[in-house]
Image (cartoon, rainbow, N blue to C red; front, side, top):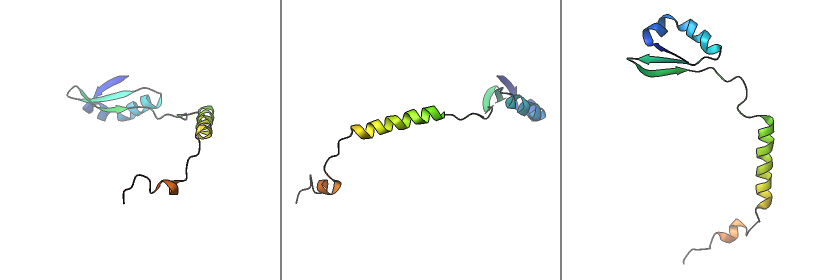
Length: 82
């Protein structure tokens, strides 16, 4: 991680972009306080195909465990007072 002031960042912007493209994190400061954080874009998917398959399997298992109840139209009047 590299920390740099705004004026220096302005003068070396292309070089900072090169660092970020190589995986480096760059923080730009104003009066010593961080105001910008430059991070490399993730090139790999956040979730894998295996994780998706596992999650879908868990959803299917949940659906299978839910017992069907009365139809919604049968519940409409329940709890109402005339």
